[in-house]
Image (cartoon, rainbow, N blue to C red):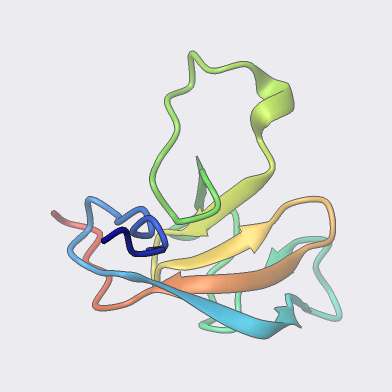
Length: 98
C-alpha cells in the first residue's frame, strides 16, 4: 500500500527547523539610515546577512549571483526574500556559532 507523503522540509545546519511566516513580515527602515533592519535590530553593518536558500541553509559565494534570492539574518535566523525585503520564515533555535 502506497502512501502519499510530503518530502521532508530542508533543515538548516544551524540546529533548527525552518518555520514559515505567513503572511511575510516587512523589514524595518531606520529613519536616518538607508539600511534595511531585521525586526531583531540587526542590519548590514552589524551582524549582517548571508546568502541562503529559502530554508535558511547558507549558499556558497561561488554560486551564481542571480540565485541570490534569499538572505539569512545572522543574529536571529530569520530568512529574508531579498527583492521584496520581506521576512518569509525563521530557523527555530538558531545558533550562529554552530
